[in-house]
Image (cartoon, rainbow, N blue to C red; front, side, top):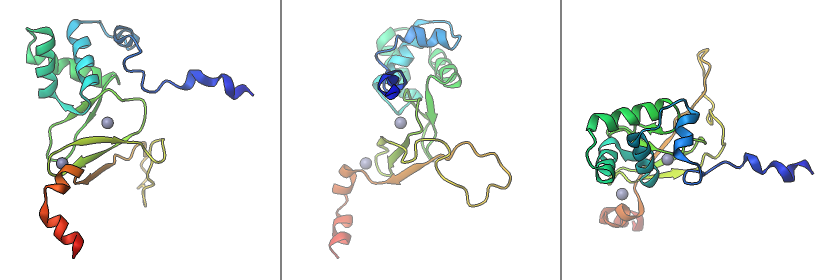
Length: 163
Ligand SMILES: [Zn+2]
Ligand SMILES: [Zn+2]
């Protein structure tokens, strides 16, 4: 019966509902226009590169130095308000979905990056065959492949499938 009242645990996807200034203060960070703009920009464009965020923040605030945007990304990531992923052969990407252990699907052709829920939910969601004595706390998973659009545009794939 108690379970009915446990709605408070349901804090996922509160990106827009939570006051971003309160988020910053909650992590002991000073509230600045740059940091708020960076949070907004990442929220609006998950998996953006620092360059993308820089452009968005500049369009939003006007005169902001690139360094200020990069600094804001770094501190927000360090404080756990943003998550940084670093796919192979790509620039680092940022997202504001930080409260779960979700993974990513990345298209090898166009780089499209999509969230995918973790089938297990908690870290580490894969068991290492041999942990070599490490205390493992995370398994970083990226699913590589081809998105729907890129599969369509590759006729050879179609031929292969029919063969
Ligand atoms: Zn693609
Ligand atoms: Zn993501």
